[in-house]
Amino acid sequence: MTKVARPELRELGERNFLWAKAHMGALTTLAGKKGEERPLQDVRLGVCLHVTKETSVLVDALLGAGAEVALAAANPLSTQDDIAAYLSTRAKVWAWRGETAEEYDWCIQQVLATRPQQLIDDGADLHVAAHAKGADGIVGGSEETTTGVVRLRALESGRGLAYPVIAVNDAMTKFLFDNRYGTGQSTFDGIMRATALLIAGKEVVVIGYGWVGKGVAMRARGMGGRVRVVEVDPVKAIEAHLDGFEVSGIERAVETGDVFVTATGQKNVVPYGAILKMKEGAILANAGHFDVEIEVGKMLSEAKGVREVRPNVEEVLLPGGKKVYLVARGRIANLVAAEGHPPEVMQMSFANQYLAALEIHSKHSQMENRVYGVSREADNEVAAAALESMGVSIGEPTEEQKAYSKSWTG
Image 1 (tube, rainbow, N blue to C red):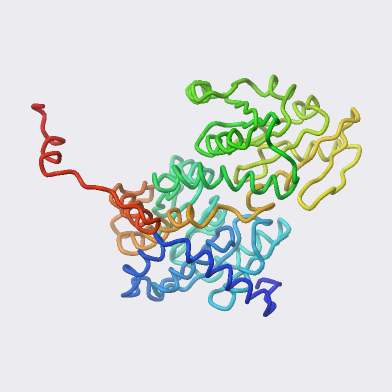
Image 2: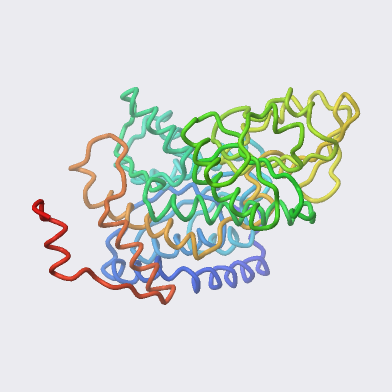
């Protein structure tokens, strides 16, 4: 059920699918090699991902391997309706842009009603919902994002994890590129589509200096922004300082910041009290998976007025008379106000998801109910496929160098 399965949308979705597929060679190459014998024949996959053109290429690869796919969105506002319409001709799809919270949960329940044997998730909402229902018949799954892995590790530490999960997020070919280059570029794509304002000369405050924060800060500086990083982790704060950024707490940042971007996965890192102290016209955006990083609920409930001034931009009149601007209701800006990560980045993340699905299917009976990392061999396989797709060739160590690397005599 997509609510939007009109023929013209399906045609647009197919064109966008083909465009993404042409730029995701790492995934399509691996799928071509490994999917030829249909290793997932008749395996029921429950999938909860952002329904974008890049996701359609992963679904295509899974279908090509023989799987049956049931798909829901990983965010109420991230679905691209043309892609949902196109995929509805090939898989079971419950996704449309603008789902209510109740509809979002209902869609996830419809995926679980197909009795999936494996899960592919982004944010762990599908995993959590499956555990709430007993996780019957599910032999394993994978998780795409930092926030979801944190939730699953908490479940594991409480000995409540019901099946093995591969943390795709922890693959080097995921977090080094997807989190940094993908989110870094696409977050500003979303902010700029929403606001149409100049970044150069503005103070951009990046809250959190993990891999996502690093990417956001790097892109902000590249566009001429004056970048300040807010951190509570002393090691990350030192790293940001040595990378050449101003570093402070949120209390100092609100005095001078023009654009605030959250990237922590943590709750209320921009509290309502800090919002009240911001400059007139400050812009608030979130790059994290869930809409908990900015204290949006309290800000909107206390506001003297809220009005949409542009698509995905709300003007919030604060009690003291100042106005601030909220992008995408505090939800993930790159997917609500833009199209998410570029396909060249997602080719690696989704190649890892594809390989994880194959590994869970073939090895789940030998795996424990815990969160597993991605093997170095799989990481290298994805990296090699990505280099090939980009037309980049590299050398190999000589036999002498191989022997030297294993020697302890020097």
